[in-house]
Image (cartoon, rainbow over all chains, first blue to last red):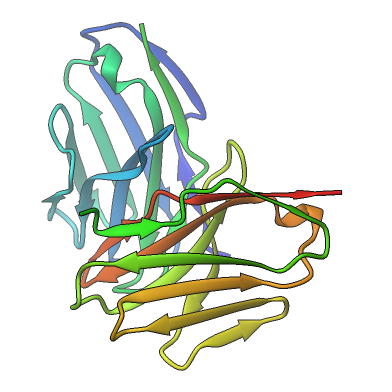
Length: 111
Length: 108
C-alpha cells in the first residue's frame, strides 16, 4: 500500500514563526502536492513538484515556499506564519497523471 | 466560472435510496477524471477513476461525457457508511483540480 506520511497531525504556532511541514511518500512517485483545505473553499493547491528540485506554483502560493531535495520528501514552509494560514494542510503524491494518494493532514493553528 | 463545479448539496437520503452526483469541468483538455470520498476530519481517498466508456464498481457507477464536459456518480442502495463528502477531481496534465465537494448523509 502507498503510504504518505506527514510530520504532525496537529500544530500550534505563533504569528511570525517559521513553520515547516514535512511530507514523505514511499512509492517512488514523481509528483507531490501541497493543498490547504478550508470550510466552504474545498482543496486549494499551494505548490506542486514533478521532480526533485522542481516546483511549480499552484493557485495560492503567496506566503508559502517549498523544497524537494529528495524524491520521497516534499516540504512546505511558512516563512512568517499569519493567522490566515490557520488551516488543514494536505500532502499528496501521484505517479504521472494518475490518482493521488493523500497523507492524513496537518491541522495548523496560528495564534 | 470555477474550473470544476459540483452539486452544492447537502444530500440527505434514506438508506436504500439511489443518489446521483453531478460534476462539470471547464478545461476541454482534461485527461483523467476521478471521484474521491472524504470522511469528516479525514483525508480524501480515491473512490473510483472515471473512464470514457463509463465504469461500475459494485453499487457505484461513474459516467463521463467529454462532449458536455460532465461527470456523474451514481450510488445505488445507499448505506449509512456512504455518508461522506464526494469530490470530483479532474486532471489536466500534471495538475489535479478538485471540485468543492458534495456532502451526502444517509439516514436510517
